[in-house]
Length: 202
Figure 1 (cartoon, rainbow, N blue to C red):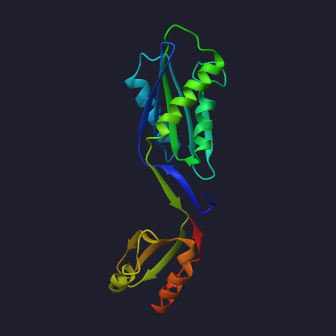
Figure 2: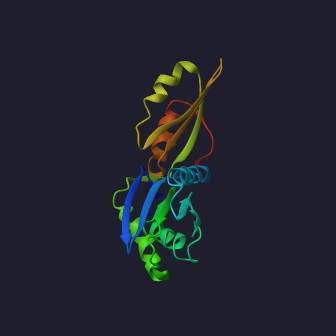
Figure 3: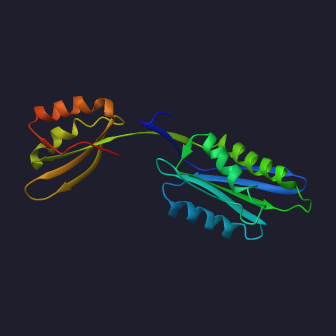
């Protein structure tokens, strides 16, 4: 992915892996911020209180902020392998939770790495993914009676309406435009005689 686009989780996915009696479930979900990731993890802990481990990894933001936890498994055998799979898939805004029920036979560090990483890899095959593109935010101020004409310039996904604020005298409108369409949009706005603020990437 280029710096102008990136891939994010657009839904949830689950996969199961069994190894020498142990059961491993990988749960993937969108995580636009840490609060969403923690909420997803807490919900799985509540749903499966009898599980031996609830390990996790997430990548959030751009550039991604990463965190991983082995949650009682030997160091480096659960959270980091799951994080490596997410990183290899070039995904962000995603959380992975590995839930394990111990089957009575120790798998060793290598076995745990393969199991947790393999479960997340299998879940990734089912995960809906969306490509996000960088946007330039253009803020426009205009009279309320001109809002209809401005809205005709909105053409998703290249140009999107990002917000409106009204008062009695004017409307302030935020337009989010992909960088390659910015110049053309500014020309159209200038033709309307509209004031715009400096560019800001979002």
